[in-house]
Image (cartoon, rainbow, N blue to C red; front, side):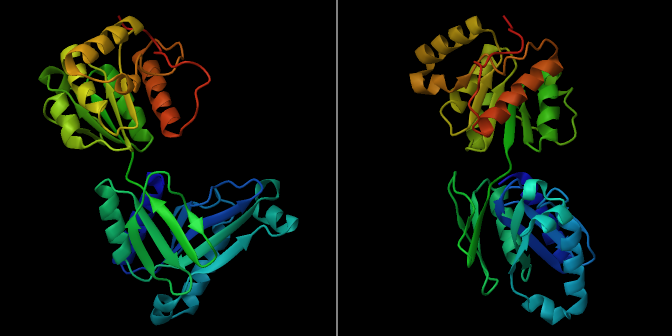
Length: 334
């Protein structure tokens, strides 16, 4: 589950705390060409304000109208007692055309009045602690239960129970605060990564002033170790200083981080791997996890272009896309 959905839940919680009635809508099944996948989430407030999307704009207006009408017709007690229900859009070609669903696509949705904000608070707290959480909704009662989930677990719906998985926000730890790191940080921030930067060199760290990017004090190996990298964490060493980069890589390659990369030419990467194997006892399998030279082969030359290559490879690995060409740096650095 992407962090976009966590923002939807955070908005829903804020609205409930402010005294609004809120409905959540989840895509549970699609046929044909559908703009949003199963699990996509939308929150609708009693006054029609929305967060998220279930169709890219095709059916949202109708959902807003339905929700406002239902809230207006019901008293406070009736709102709190309302149960989840199924909604289907695009059951006919004419209806698909009416709602703008492409290629005759059909959407099956679960509409769920939020009765209690307690589960929202718990779920957001658990994901903030970098835990995967499964949320199960009973359509018969509207009751929500939370449990631990495992990576790879997907949404399930059997007609009576809807289970969706919410993961922690994807995060990126950059070793180094130089020009390239700042470019990578800006792009990752736009992509909604939690971006952390570690650089014990004050002359570099002092220039780091990007909104939404957090500086983490300490030496790289200590920072990686204390971060407890998980399968939602990427780590990239960009100082080009072996004393700093190798310290971070030593811990990163032994961790559960889904991506570990390092700046440097092919020759430097081979030298680095020999050094890590000989002096730090890293296994061949651990060393094979290193993306180095870092980034996709884009022919990049400027810091911004190289940053694009790095972030693109991180997204490629995150989304489990098999590369069509061998990974290589946008620009080899000796």
